[in-house]
Length: 88
Image (cartoon, rainbow, N blue to C red; front, side, top):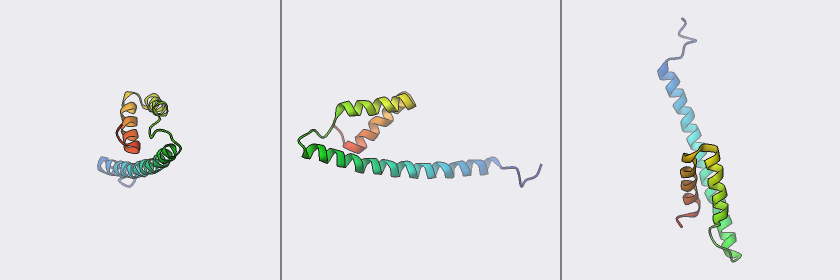
């Protein structure tokens, strides 16, 4: 068995962790972008006489996350909504 073609468990783990870190960086960036877009939506809605929060829209988002990720997806969506619109 050649060591040049064999990957050690430590190297595999280190490589996978690097990928996870890169994915986390992308996820954080996307969340920050989502927060900025959500602020625009809220400000526009309020300026036009509407409410800051649209509960039917939030239910759609919760449903999408639950459908894609199961019950933990609902918790993730709730956290995401809180980050983007604040506590209600």
